[in-house]
Amino acid sequence: MNKVLVKNEQPIKLLLIASWFGLLTSLTEILFLGIKKFFLHRIIQLSPHVVWMTPLANLIIFLIIGLVFFLIACCRKRFASLGIAVFIFSFLSFMSLLLMYKSLHQYAALLLAIGLAVQTTRFVSKRMQGFCILVRRSMIYMGAFSLCMMVGLFVWQELSERHALADLPSISPGAPNVLLIVLDTVRAQNLSLYGYTRATTPQMEKLAKSSMLFERAISPSPWTLPSHGSILTGRFPHELSADWLTPLDNTHPTLAEVLKANGYFTAGFVANTIYCSYEHGLNRGFIHYEDYLISPGQIILSSSLGRTITNNNTLRRIFGYYDILGRKTAERLNSDFIRWLSHNRQRPFFAFLNYFDAHEPYLPPKPFNQKFGIQMPKRISSIIHRTNSGERPDKWKMAPQEIQGEIDAYDNSIAYLDYHIGLLFNELKRRGILENTLVIITSDHGEEFGEHKVFSHGNSLYLAALHVPLLVLFPSSMTEHKKVSSPVSIRDLPFAVADFLKLMNRSAFSEHSQGNTTIVLGSGTMPTGALLSEVSAGTGVPEWYPTAKGEIKSLVLDGKHYIKNVDGSEELYHWETDPWEKQNLANSEGDSQDLIKFRLSLQWILKKELRK
Image (tube, rainbow, N blue to C red; front, top):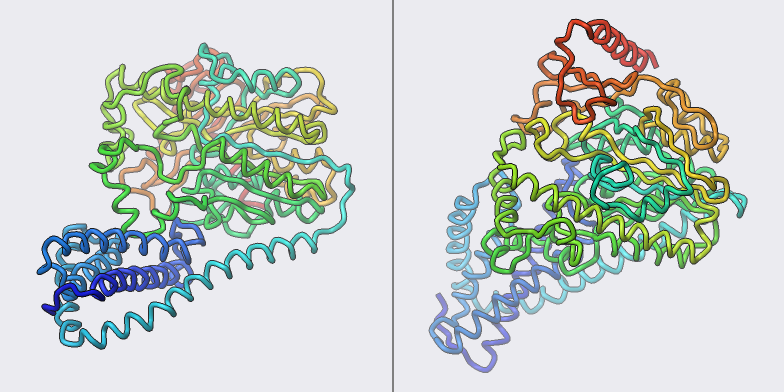
């Protein structure tokens, strides 16, 4: 190793080497991500702004470590050799790249990074003068390239939006706006809007006084991507490409595409970047789409080292931060939407808002974090353990008081979300927008808290995971509160919206609506019919998941709920008299005719879809 001690130019060389390795690591990370996304067609779960966020994040991380190294070197000059600097930063660089491979154990990555760093140091130490020249010259080009990528991305996004706006067909200025609000992971059973004993939704209750409330709205799927896919396309989950590792493809038109073709300015604002980002196909048809934040948290997450550091449980405990880093709160989402409205009032709009505040780990800010129960440190520790151990939700062992703690936190999160929904509507009313806006408030799916020894969502079809809120508001035509008791599927929302607006191309959804169960937005009666929900096997499903070996399907019909499990076993519950589905009627002799009816209905629906 080079034994040159710190001289006047030595500190600058140390920091230059740190910066150089940081930028080189970033560009290599971006290259690997690009190959993964564009050549292997994988979802990378990162913002497109990684092209400049990753260099910025790694530059900060490497410079911080470089400064620490420099301070140590000032006290212990023998540690200030350029050779040691090369070893440290090449090790960090290799470690950062190796951590991108999830299948490689961290200890294996550590040992391999050390070995590669040793070899790199030996090679560079023999050519230190030439290496320093290379660092100085190439730093400028790497920095300029990163800057150009950042500017180019912002310019491309702005020009694309302007071009799409210019291509929109004409539309009557008086056409109604459409606002679709999805409260991610909010089940109807925990809303005071639906009779829950806790006052979790006072703001939505106020809205309900002049709106249409659907008492039995059913989601077609118990998890995010297929449910959102159905909400936007009107198709059943089994008809869609959307699954664990596959985005929604362009086979079926979306509501955003149809409204855009009718001259609407379409915009999406989503907080769930796990399954609602631009990578998952839900942005199709939206001229403007905001998913990932441009924030310090998101910048840190854009770096492989940053993700590893911020996901470290020990560091999280030290800093007392347990939330999803970079999570977009309801307050921020409202702000983004209102800011967009302030600059885009030239034509009617269709806006899609996805809120993520009621999703695990249920950590709303003060004072809502203590509204229905104080969050104890033990609860947070157990969440971290369950999440990182990979323990399956159907095997979670939780005492009754622990389960109640989870429900308290969930209710706190819903109350926080409801409060900001109220603020949003107050602002829309103040701006005079609400009077000509069709508003739909619903959820993609519910949540389970051990009612059937199952927690979380996506792994069963009990009503706790399927029964969602559905509230429709159009102030200029709805002056009185109206309750609709007949079951409906939120899968029928695209046709209901297109039909309400009398769109010429609403036929894109009509032939796929659920027969006589279509949601009616108006004064008409609500017919009944069998409602299909399903969770299917797909690529990337964990082996322990119930659907890894097959699929689960359910039907709601005539006040009863039928479930056909992966192993062929059946369950039957009376929704109206047993809303928590505690008594399985499938083995009851008196209900054998109901089972036959449900089996035939399921076969008919599936064969009908196959015939299309």
